[in-house]
Length: 377
Length: 214
Figure (cartoon, each protein chain N blue to C red):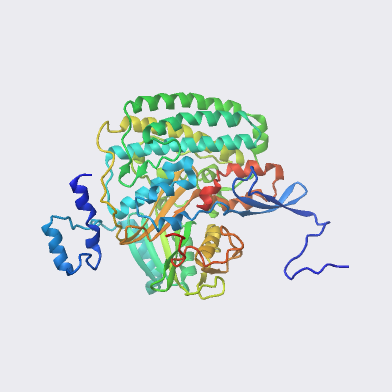
């Protein structure tokens, strides 16, 4: 006797070779998202990413608040990279309102952004380590991250959600003796960072799991419009800080990190090398920064943007991060679109996972530097 | 708060078309504020900026190829905005990809204009392969009709998909479809992306979708 099924619904046959797996959304290996994976034995046949479990409508909320009220909630998608997600917003609003930023504030912003980039990369590295079964690589970055969190706490007063960058500069000036303290901690961190290489990146087990898995070729990386470390690990020399320098990045001494392999190992190695460059930027900025002066241009209360639109972008921990703001002579923006690196890199997940072993899924997934909360906004 | 702050704070009302001071015409209100010494300068200083040469040459190439089919909205440093009709947008995009060498989309988004009954679909295009274009972002926009009672997928809010031209727009167009109800014809995978499967309200980024309590 056959059971009558409602139209449009069919059952999978028991003897089907292909099995469908739901990875997430409550799975620690996926973050707050779901991957619908079809496997044939141990090999992934297809992968369908299903984000949206942490969609909060940041863009809609921004239409109800004025340009200043928008600051704290727009940093929420990535709280451990909060300076970098606010950076393009501040640049865009400054363009809209025609605000000039004091020279010292530009340097302070760069220092905050680079400290935050290190915090983000260390957090990501801790997760990457633990999902590859390397507990030490969870403990070390999580501990060293505190160095930078302490610095940003001294700068802004908050440990994680700083809301430090505001249109017109930064919220408050640096505390006394900040330069020496910052230099001391960054120097210590650079020494410490070299130990990561020996314990993690030269580890034969890590190499066996990540090298030659999930290879993204240069042409595919460009065609799929990937960004950030994913793009640079595939051999494309593109960093917004170099290509379209904002604030004072053109005066500072640093290099873009590019690798040619395009596998999971390269994608995890590029952010690590970028931390050295961030340290260089911080030290250079401390040297070149004006020692005194204003750090914030005073805005009119409730400023209105003209009948205009603007698109500004920066390089965040996960790639180019752009804000598209349309204004219509009101104190609130008419439309805010946040173009985030995580969402742009999401498209290569089905490409990379196809044909991989299921066991390599975390190694490939986390190497994409993907942050679900940011992708959903 | 100093007295200067308060002075600035009250300038808001003068920028509206109607004055908020009861019983005064706009000119009288202006005089009233001037007597009180209140700053009436606009929030946004209007400074004419020179038109950059490289961006102008790129925009000229597009407008000479397509003549009156496209409209160049603005040319600024590193930013060009081009508006095309939705019938022509695939041709314009192909020209931008093949001849101007833009190779990927940074974002695809919609902007809802209920007053003119239109939704604008905006593509932000960039280039990794051409070193000269690394700074540039080209904004390609088109307008689609907007229905008062939306029925995503079956109403007139539709535009050709650019997925065959720029592969990277795939997920962005899916997001735009669910958030604005603009159907992309020829898109291979027009499913929901971020919204739940059982979402039964109007597309949430339209202006007539109100957040509760606001």
